[in-house]
Amino acid sequence: MAVVTVALLQMVPCGCDQEANLRKGERFCRQASDMGADIALFPEMWNIGYTLPKLGDLAARPAWQSQAIVTDGPFVAHFQHLAQELQMAIALTFLQQWPHAPRNAVSLLDRHGALRLTYAKVHTCDFDNEIAVTPGDGFHVCLLDTAAGEVKVGAMICFDREFPESARILMLQGAELILTPNACELEQNRLSQFRTRAMENMLGVAMANYATPRENGHSVAYDGIAFDEHEGLREMCLVEAGPDEGVYLARFDLDRLRAYRSAEAWGNAYRKPRCYGMLTSEAVEPPFVRTDARR
Image (cartoon, rainbow, N blue to C red):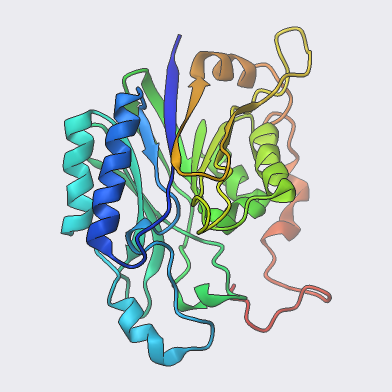
């Protein structure tokens, strides 16, 4: 049985102290490895604990932007060495240096320490202080080597999961598992949205959130298998954390997921793309017009 275990690292950050966040992140990664994880997933923008300048505070932006790091710098390299040492993939999140304004990014490091993909948040919260970051320009999938075999992995970040297009395009690129760093309150509606992303695309989803009091925890994972072999309704939730810090494991049965995907009706089996042209239109009509939105 091919089972990939994702560790949801639900933590409280050490503010903007990047060295302290590095050490705490390493400690939680080591705990995840000891628990048998194949992949460790950080909450959103871990290197600075998802701190952002206040909306409209232009004077604070230069100091905040100076905290952005490069993917080939010492912070990411530290976790590349750790991934190689632990033989465990790590989905590391950080504020990424970028021309004009930094990006909200996640880098997936494989168990050999190699960088497999870097994804920047596409659906930035432009109505709030994420107007200070540069949105990403696309969604990406990579083939990740794990002890259980290869798995096709994609990523989306926080607000991305509230748009069905994010998970859908990852599914169309072949994703079997989507990793989702998060930094907001996870309540019933958002959890239901996330569950739906798994069900409608027949793929696994895993989300790591900040623990209380930074956020409310409830890191969660769903395996995307809505019905059993006899068409009986089954529980897709693999794990849902409470509010407190901890490492929470989600075990994805890839063999069962792949068999389910080859037989059931959702995903890309019966879609009618010829009717979806309006989905790529950039026109916005009332009541959805927002002056701060970036297309």
